[in-house]
Length: 122
Image (cartoon, rainbow, N blue to C red; front, side, top):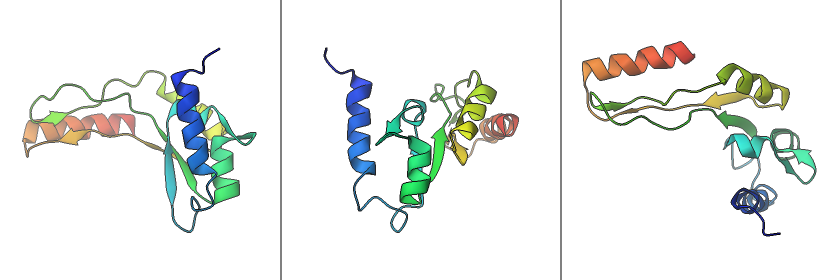
């Protein structure tokens, strides 16, 4: 049948990652989506391929997007199963994680909420 959108996206990412120009001489690290982490590049798990073949450090995007702006900041949406996701990432050779929140203005209460959320996940 017709390939899924995720299959097409992975094919594009594979084309990028297998390019001779995509290597540790030019790129320090790559942030992977969970779906990409769980796939393979040329028969090798993605994180392993990045490190062993390209000398690029694999990171995993673990945040699930941002909440609506409140108090001039955007907190991260809840991250369900973070421990399980991190365990899977470690088993697959991922070096670290990436998550983000956004500070729009210097609002003391909003920044306090972001710091509390980041430390609770950290």
